Image 1: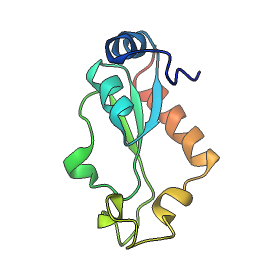
Image 2: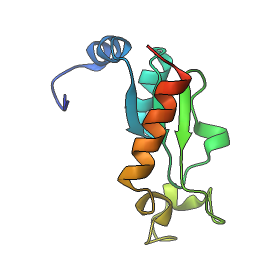
Image 3: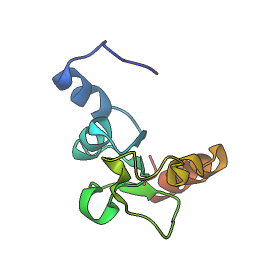
Image 4: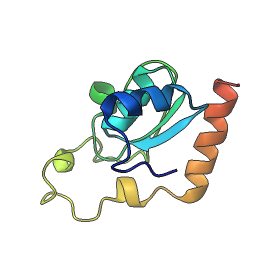
Length: 106
């Protein structure tokens, strides 16, 4: 479901608390969903999971790399490849979603 430009912030927060599960990259919507208590699959790239991952009913999905976390989250000149994100596959997301549903059954 795409709700781009359809809801304001309060409407979005209300909407995501009604969902069974939420999947998003490291972003504002991910943090809002986690704050609402919605089980959330949090897809991280170069960001520092220890510092920025939300707490609660969440599962972190990331590709472990020797260079993670790195500064390319804010400075893309350091890494043009983004293997930490590009290396995640649809199968990785599917496995993550399956694990999230097992951790937080409805």
